[in-house]
Image 1: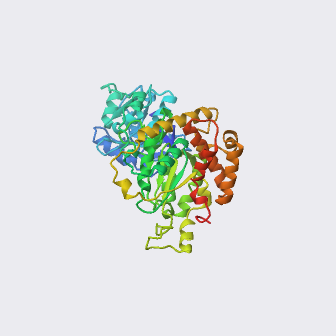
Image 2: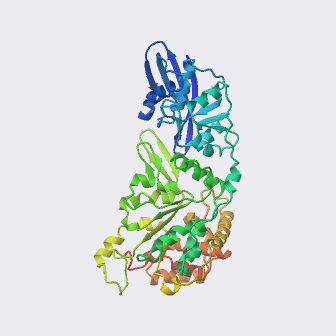
Image 3: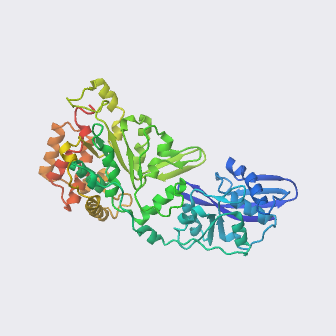
Length: 511
């Protein structure tokens, strides 16, 4: 007897419906075709045990299973439930006339209970697009799949519940989530707030500019000056996520299996990988590609602490994603693309000892040691970082102050207003949302300078020996400063402030 049941495969952050054809005929054997990986091939043992422990049996006949389209690679144990239901129907142990209306996915334990799967959200989105009535999946994944409206999502605990529903013996209540209510639900303000930061007014101003324009930023300062503390507070002043951004971010975390029982992600992610991270872990990949840290930071912040400690080749693989806002992973038979639009925040010591130009420090670094240390960061990578700022230690008088600093909420209001100005400005540009994404053409269009501003920029570049790469960066940052003030034209004061944020382009840093 031939039956068809439906599952789904996830490639990148998109799903493809898989038709599982089960044919049971005379003979003996278990044949699984359609490019399954080892986890799927091993499913026969899990299925046999689960069926037996739930009062069913593995048919003693020839079982042929085809997973179509047959030229797409299928991976993982999430097809266990799909195959088990197909075998039960094909062997006439159960009867159902509604099976073609549902997507069925789940990993089986030997007792028939279900384990969570990856990619539930993109699978649910695809199921709705293709007109399926509902989606059976492990109860742990039900909330993330239920984000999709107009699709009945049934979170089940075991195989028996699915069988009872398909045979009409017992009804299940679909998991219901009001997506917009989930998105707009009251959130606790982030734990890290700028009101707790003593002093560092110029650095906080710099962080506000970076957040307002989506600019990548690097903090340079000695140990204990507060670089990591400041970086952790950056998400608290970023604009609230839009519903579209929340869905994009949730899809990536769903594919990576990081959602657990959480529904919609509505806070910007903050990722801080260790400096020993590998290329694949950072940008994504592997034999069966998974999103890396830069994709997990999509619509949020990627913080690289002690940047020169990262392997140079690891840093270099970030160059293309920083430019294109996505990462493409190619394999012999397929290519997947993960979005990776994030703000890069990096920190570093100014020298191997950490105390560059500090005459009171007992530890000195030779010119050769300085060159080796700083050369770990390539020019092309620095070219993608708009703001360089020096962080100095906070004096005791500031640390002992009782007065609270300006809160993140107040700063966030100004940042959000500046982003709204940019949204209107770039409304007709599909690939540009904020100032940091401007191309050279857009810079010429939106960053026009008057005579005095142009002369100031020329003088600064000559006297401070700023590199050519600093020119566009200064214009982008000055555009953001003007937006924070709510003015249309960039003036000399905006240019002067932006020039201060190019420390590593000055002679004496990187040569």
